[in-house]
Length: 511
Image: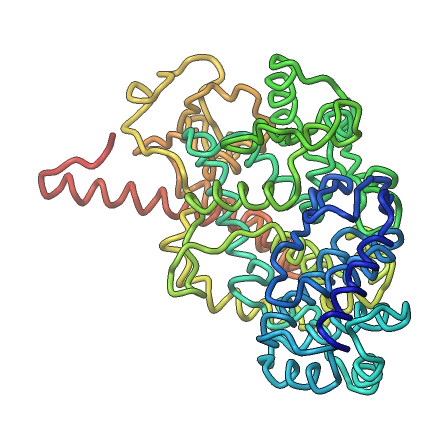
């Protein structure tokens, strides 16, 4: 086809485009626009067709008509992925070929893909099959035939889980506990905003996708029952707020949520408002709101932004990991989901139960959590434990001389006593245990508010915890419940001994 004929066909197709298209989620857009913008549940989607130039702009009407069919029946993420795959194909192809694309163009594209990029052929195949089936110009039928006959490897699902990838896979048991302690301490010291602490705790408790948390509203948490109704994603429904899964939330997290909601309501948010409002999460909220005030997701932070801001906040306080040469552990929302599924598998949950808790409709999606033996994981954690312990501090508080040197100086509620070993206090709470529902004194040793006394009976507390652990030696999970507290008590004992040694040499290290 000559260049003049191509231009004529392109113009005719552009004129044939409809002026109004409704997406699967009910959003409306004009396909004639150079930039498509629409919302899909909590997501904000955008496709910019001005990228196509130097001859490729003649293919844009065909591309748009092919994408429109997916707009009506597929998720917005799939539509964006299809356009991204085509744009990558164009970039690697180089100068725009004269006439339509041929099978040779597809073959050349395939040879330029790196081994870890071969999955792109599968995504491109979906678009080209539709393109050719619709009889649109710019793509010869041989392109679809070539791709149909060629094996197109997809993404290697679950590779990060099966290989226990230290950057993108599940956290190890010690990493998980170290991160939990680090974020609690960072929040207590004012280094972490409450919304990011809560998101981290909910990721740990529910294992949801970031889009599910971006869809949350204040009304989804019931403070009287401590139950969170988590919206479900990837259900093929119009949006994520049609199906929900119930999760029990701990009293400690529930109290923090209540405080958080009180702040939100004081700033004008009602029960129908988002749990993680865009104005709160973003440093510089969008001046132009893409949603109308009556939109179900008005004011919600879109998932990519919520994920990015969470990673930015937590990165500053993430503890080190020996699996990455003691660099701070990467903390992405997806890793919590992998950890949630892995821990359930290790605890003996069935595939049906794990699939239900993770919101999967296909049991094949949870096979990955059973691919590695729990014994292997246990051995990895044991090997890493001695290396991680010096850096992943379990004790987050401040050692003090005695009660007179503590923050509260013996005020009501501040004394922490383990009556099973002594009537003498082991330390004090800097906030008089206000709003605390943790098990005292076991949990106190890992709390940033705890101020252990120098000459308190910490060794007796340690001996009691070790005896309790021995009772559960036949159940590794139960035996490990207080391991973090045991490490914290050991650290306090070591700190006390260090102070005594320094005093013997004429120095003082207590606050």
